[in-house]
Length: 500
Image 1 (cartoon, rainbow, N blue to C red):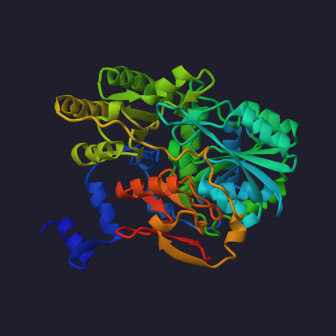
Image 2 (cartoon, rainbow, N blue to C red; image 1 turned 135 degrees about the vertical axis):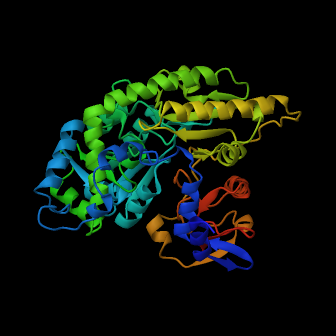
């Protein structure tokens, strides 16, 4: 028996006749597939990191706070120097390493900027960590809807005038949280919103989780650091090459008290920070300084070739190009490859499964009408070539297949149709709850966040009233094996609601 087979036999057990694998064995099995990564993290199976780690045993870098290693919570030696280096590169007042992900950064910047019962304005496409911070700090929240393109269904950001009107009608707003770029890489005109908010003495906090790479090359959309955001947090592990859970946050103005901000950064981070994560952050900054611009140029050259070839296919099109042709004030990050499906030729969910099972390509996300692939500076010509070859084979099959192309009945849960709120999230959690079937939940008040993954954006917040269109869409997602946090597993999908 092969060595790997021995491992699998040791680390599996049976549950009701079905073999169940543990975490180690499951991850080992995935690695054995040798998948091409078009998903986060950005290092793409460690490609660029390997160059920096080739002369060292990285497991020996799993240190703690000893002489010479400094302390993340009170840096004054090597960690401080690396953070200063990052600040110089991004041109911020100060930059700080994070080992608990952008989530810790979001919790920190909101907690430092507002007090209990303050009012915060957020766009409805914000990450669940924003909602969690609102709950923790007992804030009053106002939602700004985001707009969607009719054809692609991509989120194209909030309307500027709508944002201005909400600000004008609510002088109690103390801070606004913007998500930029969007999960799909859409970069809207954030600078006008920042300028208007600042005119009203409002703090602007930016979740730039998907934008750590924007500084690398002026051919990319601008970063919120350069556009005047007050505090900006970035997931360097998503779009650069640091390890998952590492992030960086930029203190970019004095509108927020620095000492208070540092305090909350310490509160929301582990007292035993990983030196592997911090070292990978330092490496990411070095890579950006030394070769970032060149890596982006190399990728853009290959991406242009991929785009031109994709245009020759009948059943697929690049949504990036369509969006930028349709909206003069919007740019789309070229590292986010949004591929639309023409005329319902195949469901995006099905396309995702085919790419994984037949072609060993793992994408980031799919809906009924598109797939999202995330590239990075570690993505190679071979990756893009194999992606196109796979899509071309699928396209030929779809062209030859005799089928009744159904009219697409895709109904997006538009985040500009915000559910009615009955209670604030922190008030909701003071009530008792009961668990009921999803199919019987219309009209009830949600007790939990309901969050499709990816991208981790809540479509229901505690205290909001569940409506029929939400239930219908959730059922479609669940039947398509979509992962939805807050809903129990099939066959009897259920959720928690406020007890009557």
